[in-house]
Image 1 (cartoon, rainbow, N blue to C red):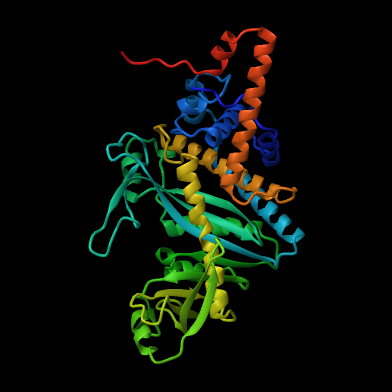
Image 2 (tube, rainbow, N blue to C red; image 1 turned 180 degrees about the vertical axis):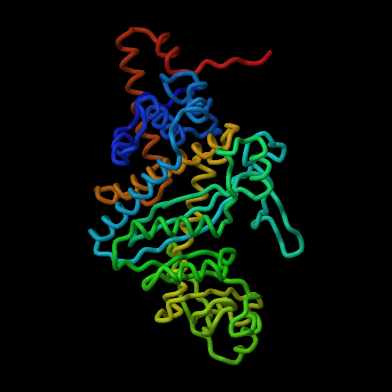
Length: 431
C-alpha cells in the first residue's frame, strides 16, 4: 500500500496553534498524525491503518497509548473548540454584515458497531429511530452522542457534543470502577441543557438565539428551559401530532381547521430546488408549557393525510420565515454523515470509556478543522463549496508532497529500491 502523508500541512499546524491546547509535544504529534490520516485515509479508520498512511511514524502501540493512558483531557479539547468556533463564526458573520442572530441545532446520532461487540465500554443497544416503524421498534448496538451546532450568517460549526450512556450501561460500568471514577447518568435533555448553557456564556450581549431540533427533543422541559434564558431566546422545532394545544391534540386541530384557507409557503433547499408547502397556523398553550406558542400544520399538498407539525415561540414570525429558518437544522445531519462516513467516528477499537471519549474528541476536532478550511477558502479567489471539496483538496496536497519527496529521493539515490522501501507499506500475505 502506498503511504500518503510525509509532512503535516501548515494549515493544520496553524489551526491547532490557534486553539492553544495544553498538550505536550508528543501528544501534539499524535493529534496531528491522527487528524491528517483521518482526512486522507479511505479505508477503515483503525489506528493501525491511520498510522500506515505516514511515511515515517512510530509504532501503532504509541498511538494506542495516546488514547488509553496519556494524561490529556478530551473535555479540555472540547472547551477550546467551543470558544474558537463561537468567536470565529461571530467574527466572520459580523465582517459580512450578518444580523446578530445565532441558530443552534440540537440532535443525537447513533454510531453503529457490530452486534457481537461487547468488550468496548459504553457500547450498548439503543433504539434506532431510522430503522423503527410504527409497528416495530428497532435497536442497534453502538454509541450515541448528542451534539449542538451553531450558524451565524453563512458560517457554521459543530459547537459541542456529549456521549450519551443509558442508565443501565452506567450501572454496569460503575460496578468495576472505584468510587471517585464512577460515571453519572445524564439524560439527553440534561446534555442538551448543558451545551446550551455553555453557549450562552460565550455569546455577546444583545444577540438573538433560535434553538432548532426535531420532534424527539420537543419536550415541555426543554421548551421551558430555553424560554427561561430570557428575551432573545426562542425555539423552532418539529413536534408530534399527539401533543395537546389548548387541550386539543394537534391531529384534531388539523381536522378542525380543514375548512380554513392554506397559506402557500415556498422553501428553497440547499441544492437550489424549491418546494411549496400548504400551511395553516394556530396559536395557543401547549400542555405543561405556560406561555403561548405558534404551531404550523404543514402539508405537501392539500390532501396530504400525514401533515408535519412545527412549533415556534417567536410569535412575530410568519409561516414562511418559520419554515425557512427551521430548514437551517438540516446541516447537523450533514455533519453526522461526514463524521461517520468520511471520518470514521464509529471505527474506534479502544476499550475504555475515557479512551473512546478522547477518540470522539479528535474526530470532532478534525471536522471543525475541515469546516474552518471551508470558511477560510471563502476569502480566496477559488472558494470551496462543501467539506467534501475541502477533503479532496487536502488529499491532493498530500499526494503532491509525497510524489515530490519520492522523486527527490530517487534522483538523490540514483535508484528506486530505497524509494519503494520507504514509500510502500510492507504487508504479509497469510499462507
